[in-house]
Amino acid sequence: MPEKSAIRFLRRDVRRVAYEMRGDGPPLVAPAWWVSHLELDWQNAGFRRFWEGVANGYTLIRYDRLGVGMSDRTVRDSDLTLDGEVATLRALLDELELERVSLIGGSSGSCTAVAFAAAFPEHVERLVLYGSYPHGAALAAPGVANAILAAIRAHWGLGSRLLSDLFLGDTDSAEQERFARFQREAASAETAAALLDLVYRLDVRAHLPIVRRPALVVHRRDDRAVPYRFGREVAAAIPGATFVPLQGSAHLPWYGDVDSVVRACREALAPVRPSPNHASELESVPLSSREREILACVARGLSDGAIAEQLVLSPHTVHRHVANIRRKLGRTSRTAAVAEAARLGLL
Image (cartoon, rainbow, N blue to C red; front, side):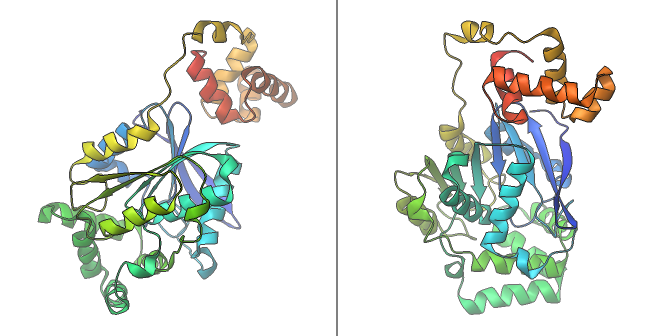
C-alpha cells in the first residue's frame, strides 16, 4: 500500500469532511471510529501494520468525522445520531461514485457499517466488524459512563489517560501516554465527550437481523472497552455471520497482537484470485491509446477539467472518453472502472 494518500474534502452543508484513499483495487471503506486524524494516524507503526495488512489489494477509504482530525472542527447535535453517521457514509460513496463497497467497521464504526448495510444492501459487498456491539447503553453502567464523560470535560489530560487505559489494555505506560496525546491532538475535550456520549447512545439491535450481506465479526476475549459478549451477540443476530474470537485485551486492533487481527479479517477480505481467463478478459477490452492515456489520468484522481487541460482536449471530449472507458470495462463509476482496469493489468 502506498505511503502517501490522496486527502480530499467532502462538503457537508458549509463544513468539510476530510477523507483519504490509499492503495489500488476494489474499494474498502472504514466508517469513522471515535476519534481519528488522517495524517497523524499513520505515524503509529501498529496502525500502519494493521491497515497495510488488512487492506492489501484494496483501495482503502477512511475519513475523519466532523469535529475531529482534519475535518472541520464544528460539530452539531444533529450530527450526533446514527442517521447522521449513515448519511455521511452515504454522501461519501455518492461523492466517489461507488456503487458497491466492502465495509470494515470497528468499535462505534461497526454500528454505522451495520446500519448502512441494513438500509442499503445493494451497495455492500461484504461486512467485517471488529470490537462491535449492538447497544451502547449496555457498555457501562449509567453512573460509570457519566463519570467518564465528566472527567473528559473537566480535565482532558486526565480524561485522555483514562481512555488510553480503557482502549489499549495491557500496553506500557509510554504507549498509553502517546495515545493520550494523540487523542488531545485529534479532538477537543468537548467534542471527545460528545462523541463518546454518541458511542453510548448508538443502538443497532433492530438493524442486525435484517443485514443480508456476508459478515465476519472479530472480537478479542478480554477487550476492556467493549466486552467480548457483545461481539458474540452481534454475530448471533446477523443471519449467517461468522464469529472469530481472538486473545488480547486491547480494544484498538493496531495494539497488541496486530497480526492475528489482520489474519482474521483477511478471511473475509482476501481478494479473489484472477481467473484462468484473465488474458482473454484483457483482450476483450479494446481501449484506444487515447483512452488508456485518459484512464491513467483518472487513476491519478484528476477531474475531467484537469485531464482536458493536461492533454489539451475539451472537457466534453474527456467526459465522452471516460464514459466509453466505463462502458468498455463494464463499470458505472470512475473508481470502479479504475479498480477493474487495475485487475486486468491495464494500468
